[in-house]
Amino acid sequence: MTIKIININMKPNILIIMATYKLSGPGKNLFQYLQYAGSEDINYMVLNFIRPGDTCHEFYLAAKQMNININLLTQKRKLDPSLIVQTYNIVRENNFNIIQSHGYKSHLICLVLSRLFKIKWVAMAHGWTEENIKIRFYNKLEMLLLRYADLAIGVSPNLFGVLKKIRKDAKKTLMVLNAIECEKYSAINDVDDIRTKYAIFNKDIVIGVIGRLSPEKGQIYAIEAFVEIIRKYKTTNNIYLLLVGDGPDEYKLKQLTKDLGFGKNIIFAGYQSNIIPYMASIDLLLLPSLSEGLPNVVLEALCMRKPVVATRVGGIEEIIDDGDNGIIVNPGNVTEIADAILSVLSDQNIRQKLIENSIKNLYPKFSPAHRAKQLTSAYYDLVN
Image 1 (cartoon, rainbow, N blue to C red):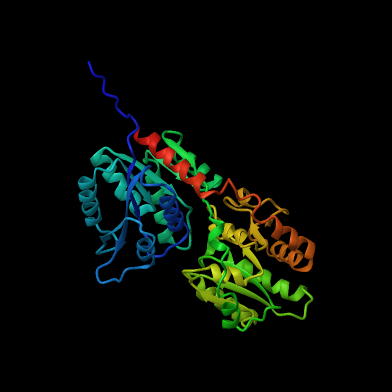
Image 2: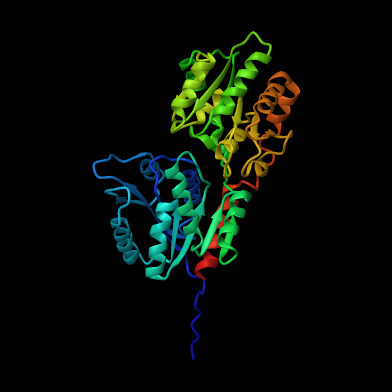
């Protein structure tokens, strides 16, 4: 009699749905995982949306460049039921055993499909913005939908706590921190080009604020703190505040800059798909946020050995050891933000300590390989 040995570990076959045009933090983290999780570990397909007549956008083009297996769903209107039909056909043809969602739109699609096909649903939570009533409504909808996923994953202790509260321990919830590949930030190009573009000399000081221009990112406090810094900091060199990003607060922030009379020293660089040369051109990164998940921009600044001043929000204390590899301040406190930056600019010893300690705590905690192992293990647990 012959005994057949059956491998009980079913391989995850994952359909990942993400509705975004730009390659922001969540998209970068997704692509990073897919490059670290080999084909021997998982099978996958990424779905993204496009409107009729639109050209291929940044997220899709970046995926293609990285050889990510990606397909597009055609979205004809804001709320388009045909997205569920299109995704239904893809699931039926490919025998997926996991569907994974990012954001309320993909959560809604995955909720329906998980019920129709009786397959496992993983929902990722990256954090929420609150710039207007519509966005707050979508946040409420997302939190409602997150209750029903078979597995929900938050990227910071704060998000993990919110998920646990929403889901009431009914289903599995995990925290998986974002990761960073410092090697990608070692080759620095176009530093002089960025400074030349804005007529900034090498001896001048540039404070960088990189992120979407929206209320929860706190750029208004960065501008007000910058005014205090200019008034207090005694130097013959010019000081600049470089804001990289776009968003709903752009007009308001530009108007505030104009009213304060510091238009020449506060630069709005707009949205940049590649922030590395901008990060390389600054002397200090300021993160003035009122809320965060686990910000990639801080990890990127540390990889590039930039001093960091950040507010005590989200997962910042997972990254920054206050006074060792960065300085943590209270959100919305303009004077505290200004004084922290002044301490770095005025004291060479403090500045040098922050630079020397910038990457020492990043690994293995924020290792992409470690993060990939966590996620892959979670997928195997789910399907087996």
